[in-house]
Image (cartoon, rainbow, N blue to C red):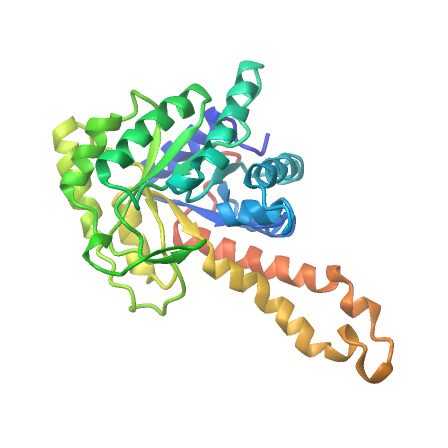
Length: 341
């Protein structure tokens, strides 16, 4: 069953942490980018995570409808059917959800999954993210505590963010300053509020200089050693090695050395969006420029149906994005690690 069950997802996460690799979590906003992501994982022989943001979910419902729940449910239904044809496990995840969108996104999706589980089915999504980076830590963790209980009951993993990711994503912007670095005290407060798994499994996005957006390597000052400091300090407190299952946000422009250092310190999920957006669009742009007199009816001509058929450039876009997903698997050491191998 290619869409991971709760048990398979737990096994995926455990294997990544034990063997020091991470899964790319690929943002998608259409059926075609979803297919490209799954194809990339399959070609790399890696299980993987496909995720949708609030903006992506709105777009998936129809650009004039903008219903996040409708878009998310539609994506999940499509993924459950299409993924059957690939030999790797795919987990479905919802990305950054700020406080003002919880009631229109994560909470209704949790209810849908709870109803499914009550009927003896698997949850619709395998994990959801609560982004409390814009509220005080105490409030962030209080909301997380409630969501964790709901997620646990629905056999879902919760993802939280402790710290602030700079830059902008889906209209949420943060300055690039010292707030981009999570502290040991923040980590200790997190385990005190949420536990270390006994209240439900959660993933933690600790920030170490991460910035959303497009940056050249070296422009963003990452300090992955912060992850080790927090893991060591909290681990000593709770008597557990690398107690956090960590997530790497805002990784565009990161060097391979920085990525691998983060993985060595407990990162098991890395969000990839900006780079795969470009990898999808670049081949489509090349097709348009190369075949401009076919995709356009120039000077009253009729154009070339084979050139402007969306499938013509769509195949190239899918292949380009799939290749970038496979590259992310290689960078994160997940290539060839599928549970199905």
